[in-house]
Image (cartoon, rainbow, N blue to C red; front, side, top):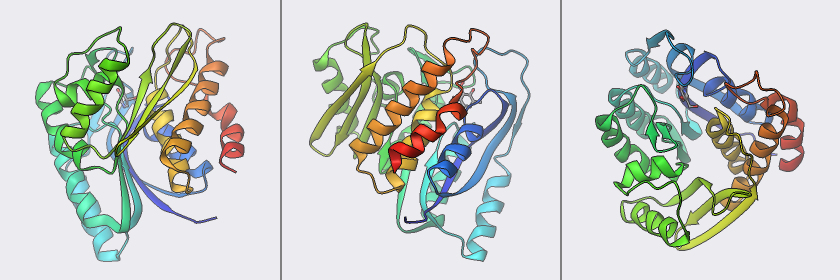
Length: 276
Ligand code: PXL
């Protein structure tokens, strides 16, 4: 098996099973050397908790990247998740330029919104700053809300294939190369991912749960990157990540006290089996 070195840039939410506390174990389970660049440290994530603490680490990013450059440290892939500010987004673009090994794959999860709404910490200016990062990445993994924000496309709760195709057209016109659009659901029973690679569009559908779970976007993106770097094609990596995320939800929903994240640890062996 190829041993790949991945850098993932996102926050540490100390409690809440998202961002780095999810990405690091999942990418490690996929068999990759996983390096982290924490964009901020929060006591919890920002959805459903109040009074959380935030320490922004924007100032530290250039010095860390400069040290890596002096040491000749380079990455086979750079995967970004939740970023705290426009300045951080600009820094990450610099890191894409300076820290990628030859053939480095860049994956951007423009983690900023869901269910038609921006996360509490963000505003319209942040969306504008996310656009150049998203459209220069090799692969983006937006949900429908994020894809709409990135393309100024009207968000709808209910939609059909023509609406989704229009959204993909807009992403493509804006420069997106490969898109894994998550949470695409045409009926109550199923949901899935729409994978666009150049001119090819393929839909993978699976069972839908009535209850959504926080943090599944991060679980999904991490599992996708883990599979892609294991040499799976984009569609195959998207399918494996979808199956794994579904299992994470399945083992979490019976426990109503576990509202803040998913019990992704319990089913990691199934993800590893799927990769093998
Ligand atoms: O799961 C995305 C995410 C990551 N990090 C922080 C968040 C969120 C979503 O709310 O608040 C800090």
